[in-house]
Length: 386
Image (cartoon, rainbow, N blue to C red; front, top):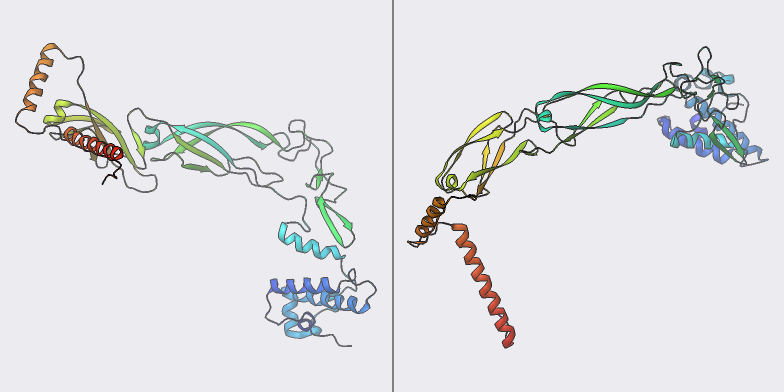
């Protein structure tokens, strides 16, 4: 009897993708599987037919031959072994294996080592100009005695006899097949009869290491430097993790940093603020002359271009922003007090306002007290204030 077309058996077109083909087969296999249809010969025959079709069409080479030559091009013995396939649980095993990473896996799987983080505190100068810093870290590294195998010198790990190296065992429960980690080897697929005395069969030991870290110019708090492969060693030959150096900048006695700009407060004499003058202010590259115009008030900001921090991500350089603070003189001599008294008298004469902020504040205070008085008067009279 001639066989039906494989595409017709599965009810799909010749242009179907591999993923759609797999989904279709799973649906039909679950529908016709003998475990779900006990004693139904027709369902069992359809299941075998679907399985044979899928085994051919899911293999790119076999599918290409079939598309060109049909059934004659396919070796019947390779296409169908006469078995009904695995148990019903195998279908679930494949399905959930794709989703959760289970399925048929070898227990000798390599695992990447964990990433590590080191918090590094730098001075502002170190962060701005860059430097090299030696850091000492503790991490799990391959045992030097057993070279990561976990076995005593002269011995080797053996394949687990319980899971046969798969790392997992399968328990059949009715229609379902439950897969779990092998309790004998704990998922590694191997057992170590004679553990290494230094690492106790773990293959890794806690090791202290000193690393040199190059700090680029312009780093700031929150930046991270990645040292590839300097984290913990992997398992079963897996690659090492990475080490991330987290940057923190110490508080500076003169400067505050915001991005690529630096800020500082500059105290000045009240005579310099009133008459103007020139003074030297600090910068990261030395002192800089700052011209103070006459009648400068506290809080006035002066921007010095290009005297900030060079960005770690570009060639731009920030600015230095100086905020002046006018100081009140202390420890005055008798003569200095007399001169200030004379100055105060002359400033009160002529009706000119020499302290603009003071007079502005006084005017606002008078307006406030007048509004409060009007409100209380209106409350007493029972009239709403306008």
